[in-house]
Image (cartoon, rainbow, N blue to C red; front, side, top):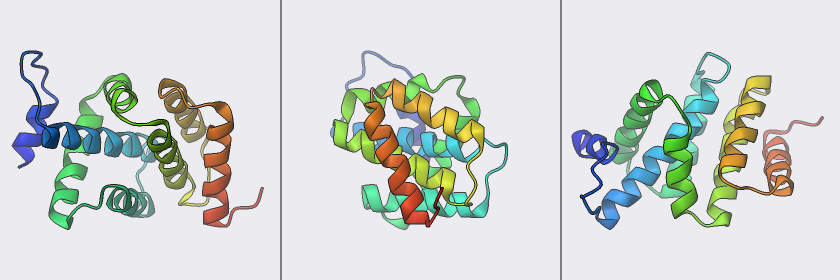
Length: 154
């Protein structure tokens, strides 16, 4: 299964993807963005890994086995990527505004799960929100929602 998911990110313009393959690509891209936030402060804590897992499970309703494969593939993609563009373009082209706003919320949730917001985390979330064409007011709403959920009062 992991090899099949990996193949999805290898560029082959002549190959038409099935709906299942498109869905898997979107799941890996979403997970990859969450891992980008987790590693923005140069360390991925157990709390952040748990929050990523919970967010993906909630959003995609995946079995534990598939979730493990998506997470493993996302970690590999993040380590090998040189840009956020491959992930954000896929998400922007395939998700509704509401789905993209939910991803921004998940990014904030990962950033706040350790009750500290690193300046690099905030900067990266802002960049991702811009690449997904999220209106600034929705960016702020997602941030405040994540703060409230985590019990952070600034």
